[in-house]
Amino acid sequence: MAATYPDLQGKVVLVTGGGSGIGEAIVREFARQKAQVAFIDIAVEPSRAVTKALEQAGTPVHFELCDLTDIPALQRTIAAIRGRLGPIQVLVNNAAHDERHATQEVTEAVWDSRIAVNLKHQFFCAQAVLPDMKAAGAGAIVNLGSISWMTGQGGMAAYTACKSAVLGLTRSLARDYGTFGIRVNAVAPGWIMTQRQLEKWVTPEGEAEIMARQCLKRQLRPVEVAKFIVFLASEEASACTSQHYVVDGGWV
Image (tube, rainbow, N blue to C red; front, side):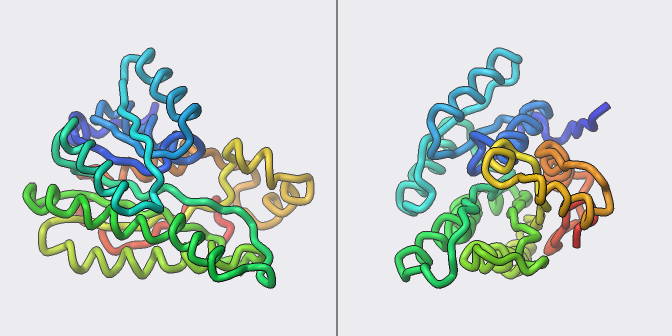
């Protein structure tokens, strides 16, 4: 039986990139905790499918369409969520884009776009929710990183640069926000079998690498990351901040 955390019931939770993959699993797990969940995504159809499914299940969530790389639009969207649901008490910075990019073909524009979609918005989301959490004297922020930079993965230099930077951002925010009772942690997933991964990257060779490198000889599911993030947001993790937690089945 999955754990429940009574302190999360009714809390306003914001998840970025919640329309699919790990983000969708995070939205579903917070909804199961009976939190007031809002999520931001740029993909309309999958996001509406998630909201419809959860409404039918009796755990409704709120979806806002927004391009996270447009910071003024992001700030307006967070303000709209606050106006609808109330002060934000939990933030999960999940949104990212792991499109591969050949190093020799990366232009300045491509580099800047990868920084924008994988790192920049994490800071500005955290900045936008600070007044809510500061007023409450508490809050939890979870930033999503990746093990890709720890394993030295090639073919995605901008992505791995961003994901390594998530750790530095997390520790700096934890120091700055801790005086207000706000906890900030990072979670680095391993190779999680989202639909996107299965469709684009998982090959027989990839399966063999998973079996060779993970301690756990099986595929990892998005819900396994989501459950850990929910724990970090709960009062069960009340002394955990400025940390980097790896959820990878023992790959690194």
